[in-house]
Length: 370
Picture 1 (cartoon, rainbow, N blue to C red):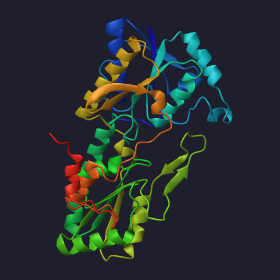
Picture 2 (picture 1 turned 90 degrees about the vertical axis):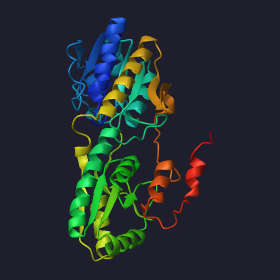
Picture 3 (picture 1 turned 30 degrees about the vertical axis):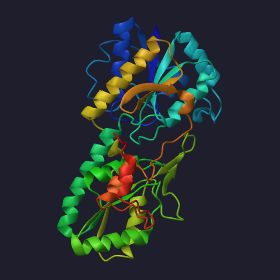
Picture 4 (picture 1 turned 180 degrees about the horizontal axis):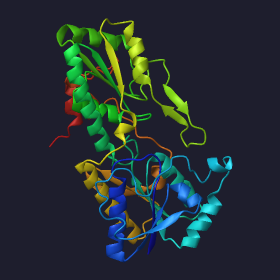
């Protein structure tokens, strides 16, 4: 066998762990030849690849980032480097020249969508779900998410001590794009008093009410806000627009917008911290190392069995695979009546919506009968 590996989209803790697992499992079990593409699909477009030996993929389990490099603007069907031209035929030609059985691709929804489109040309792919946002369809968890949650939670823990000392409102802005998984999980883990996510637009007056109530009781308030959160009847906070990218909008700055909105409503000092790319970097957590290794080995097994056109997935705590077409061009959102949201509300967290009132009995509805 001859199998390619590439990492697409943004960087993420655990990429190297997956590369290691895919390559080693195929080398050991099948004697496969492994080819790595530099900078994701850009390596396919610019014909830049390298052979990967067993030694090349050893000792990289704990390393952050990716040894192959990545790129989040190289879509072969609309390549920014060629004024948006379709270069997929040239990519397919290079794929055939290399004599590949297929390519294992590590990426998020944009990357999986590209794989689905390129598979129509005759290329064969297996996807591995990667994103700190945890927003891919058909899988309960993506690798990189646990590490990002841990980093954001640590940020909340540190803000709590300074907020408590000074009696301040402390706002922490997380990544997450158009979904609130990261802010939600970090908010629960860090004991945030207010959690703001895109799926539940907020009322600024409700947030002010919570802050004033806590000022009388605990003196400080911790707010975890996802970068895609917005006020009711409001719009997304866009930091910049990157032309040529599959998703040109770069969100960011909602934490500062929230600060400005609150300053006219409460008398406390307000501070905003934006974690930004700190959430993407560093060594993967033990959970992500294990999950990434299992994902990689499962992807290797799919390749060995010739089961292309699928993405590895975690469903009900079991590894499985789904068709790429069921993942492409879709986003998995937080459900407002989910166990996570209901649990957070049950212990007193506000989502900034005075109309969102889930009774404690709702928790019983989410627990299956024995």
